[in-house]
Image 1 (tube, rainbow, N blue to C red):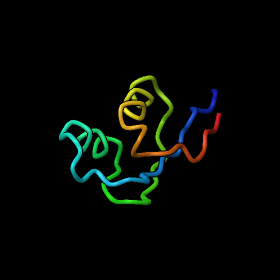
Image 2: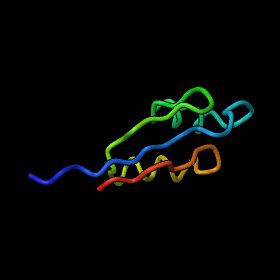
Image 3: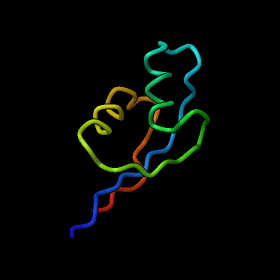
Image 4: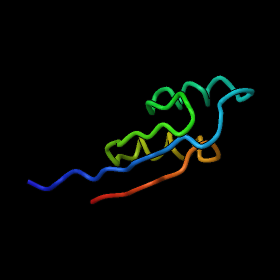
Length: 64
């Protein structure tokens, strides 16, 4: 069985004064405070969520 790809994301900017949809996207990713990191499964839906808030987060690590 192949290992699942994972991606580690860190929140680097605040969601204050951002549209509500961006705040909800961060919460959906498990990020709600600065410098929080989450390791998530690398799926198209997660990539789309990261892409929609790419100015607030950074990708720390990608593992295959």
